[in-house]
Image 1 (spheres, rainbow, N blue to C red):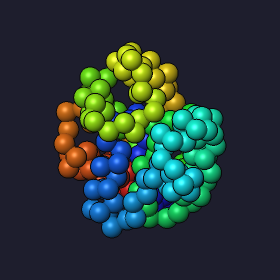
Image 2: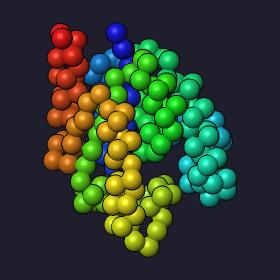
Image 3: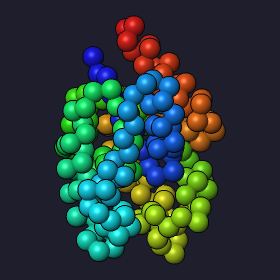
Image 4: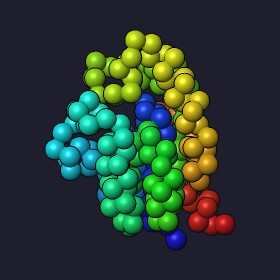
Length: 174
C-alpha cells in the first residue's frame, strides 16, 4: 500500500498550504520540492531560473524528485511543472497517491498576484495569457498523472484536506 501523497497541479492551486495541513492531520512529514531544490542549489527558484535557466531547474527537479520519491509517510508538494518530466511521475507513483489540485485561471491569477515575485514563469507583461497557455499545455500531463483530482477554486483548505482523506479511506476499503 502507498504510504505517501504527492500533490501536483499548477501554481496557485494550493499544493503547499494543503500539503502542510494534510501532513499535520495525517502525522506525516511534509516536503515541498521547490524548497528542497532551492536548499540544494543554494539559491532561490527565481535565481535558478534567471542565472541557470529553466532546463537547469528541471534537472534539479528530477534529482530532488528521485531523492524524495521513495520515502514513506510523506506528503510532497511538487512544483507546478513536475509533470513535464515523466520520470518524476513514474518515481512518485511508486510510493505516492498522486493528487491533482486544480483551480480556474481566474482563481490562480488572484492567488498568484501577491507582492511576492517568486514565480519566474509569471514574470511577463500578460500574466492572464501566460497562465491560460501554461494551464492548457500542462493539463493533459496533470490528468494523466493523477489518481485523484480536486478543484480547489471554491474550497477552503480544510475542505480540500477532508476530500483527500475521504478519498484515501474509500480507496483503502476497495
